[in-house]
Amino acid sequence: MARGYFADVRVTDFGPYVTKLVLPMENKLTQEPEKDGFSVYVERRNRRGEIMQLPLNWLERDKKEPSVGYAEVTDAYASDLGGRRTPGGDCITLELAYGPLHSITAEISAPDGFNVSVISEYCITMTKPVRTESGACAGLVFDRKYGNRCSDYAEFRESVSSDPELPLRYGYYVPQTLQEKKPLILWLHGAGEGGSETKIAYMGNKVTSMITPEIQELFDGAYLLVPQCPTMWLDDGSHKYGSTGRSMYIRALKAVIDEFISKNPGIDRDRIYIGGDSNGGFMTVRMCIDYPGFFAAAFPVCEALYDNTISDAQIRELAKLPMWFIHSRNDPVVIPAETADATYQRLKAAGAKNLHFSFFDCIVDRHEGWKNPDGTPFEYIGHFAWIPLFNRDCNFDYDGSPVMLDGRQADVFDWLARQRRQ
Image (cartoon, rainbow, N blue to C red; front, top):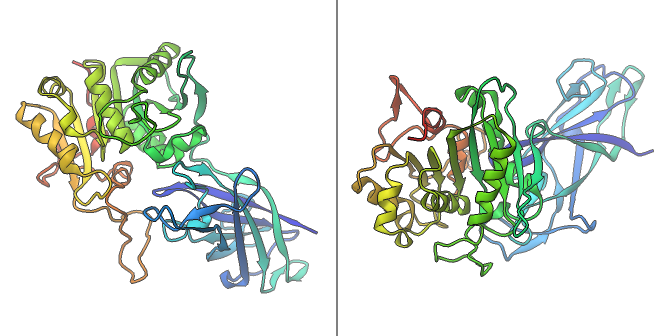
């Protein structure tokens, strides 16, 4: 008889992963299971039911292999049905290895450039006996998924703009308390999160961090709007990556923002903040140029708008807007000397008064505990500067000095919550 399991998903610094499997038992456990007493085989399939052929890694896109294999079990214990450690519980929870070195447990992947959801099928075999109130169980197989469970993005809702020419999908969050007007944070996804699956735009990276109590309390509650474009924001109509500095989505994106504001009268129009990463960082700066005076502040991350496409007149106007750039010097995808660094220097020379830049030497894991095979902290490719943003590590300026507010070091979100349209 097929036995079932629950897969618990968490949005991590590297996207959503199955971090736990919960196996319901017929009786309570009388001793703790052993983590090496289970074999966990995974097949990752597309919506057509085919095993996915996926790139070996983020940079080697053309080398693909079938996405099948065994997941590493890092811990096993008696639990309740929610996966909480419970001595004598009537379930077994297996914690799995996850992250950039364990792609087999990832819940999204990019077979052809855009991230899509993966249908992961697990087959868990008990290879060592487990003792329960009714005696020892051995050789049980759990291969029927009851479902995925994830609370990280459960509060997001989804919709589509009513623009007749170019409707855009979007995810959004409405704060819990609306006694007074609240700010709106607009987040623009990177190129890998474009497409037609809206949730990818807000869970492909840890955008969900912006609805956590920690960040929401800074704003006394904030709306979050995450639009998604079918291709990439820097698509100038050619459907290719380019350096023209133009986008075919400018008008459609502004229409989404205006429509969302009109549907939510609780939004404070003097506190509309815009940010995004890479392709979305490009669109962040582009929108600030094209709609001067509309936004209260901007926080572009590894932004991809080539500085040579920005005129001196646009720089002078942009210098009036509070801005905080985030980038890494070793970014091999978007070269900061051609984009953010060059633009920052021009803004500074133009007299920008409220301007910051957290410029990292490299992007190293500081929060997930991921290690390289030699035991050193895992280092991401330098393009992934959104990781320190969402972990609130962007709290220093271009020269390395701390950004201070009210006598204490402040990060982008501390700063953002103080900004109002002038």
